[in-house]
Length: 406
Image 1 (tube, rainbow, N blue to C red):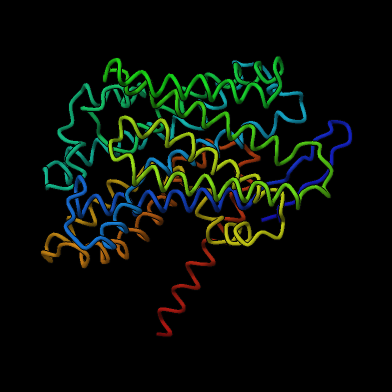
Image 2: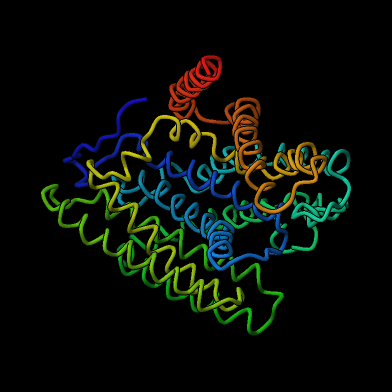
């Protein structure tokens, strides 16, 4: 894969980035975190863990999957805003063409995942086992229709795969992207982003206290603010500022990222009730995530950027969407086949399931992406994934060689 770089575009005043490998590496880390989160919830459904404080703290740290989804939304805003920077915050083509491209990228792969999940729920995963997967059962025609129509975050009591809700939320946010760009052109990026965050965060905080039936709207509003933060992070990363200010900016945004992370940790401890915590938490997670992305994007020597640009992570990141869609039933299958027959519980069960389910989920996600995601990519996107696929194949061969030696 071509090394990430940024070159100055004199005609537009914006630095035009090539493919950013660390963004793909970040996607991989987020997807893998969600896998670990759901492994935790498979072993300890609904947080049923009795242990010492340190053990409990580790469990809590591994089961904040919403934070990973927050990051995914910020990354989405970052990536969608980047191409518009050199075009005066305008889409390439019409709004209709933008929606068609998004639909082609997201929906066919998602619908295949819906069908496979439904088949599994009706066959090998059809019985409740006391794990987190139980919330996906039983399968009804209402659940199937809700999944296909991407309303499964609205009707949360009917679902066939417990990760699909976030796809529905992000899909709705895409329809708001042209409006966000219009606000940028009218008010400027900074003011527009601040206004969007203020409106969405305050509304998201107030709505659930009016009616619990508005919970889905709360999430959509919160995530719209995160999406806007990601777009503004793209502007700050690849704007027209002279390159010699990068080190100064890097320091500022590193401090902002650390401060945001500390506030998030404090909120997790001080606000245990999700209804009142999530809207506040989302804002600070978004600030921290956006600050991290700016810091990593403007500093080529960042150690975090170097880690996220590690080829195996980049390879996984390019099919993170497929991994995210399909990991939940794979984790449940691994638990039923390997953990339940051995009658393991607690930490031994968790440890074994991590080492069994994680690589199988990655391999399954990769195969799923080859069959059902890659065919719907544009020619440019397919060209970007080819080197990563070759790198992943090389890494798998290396792992096989090492296992044979040992």
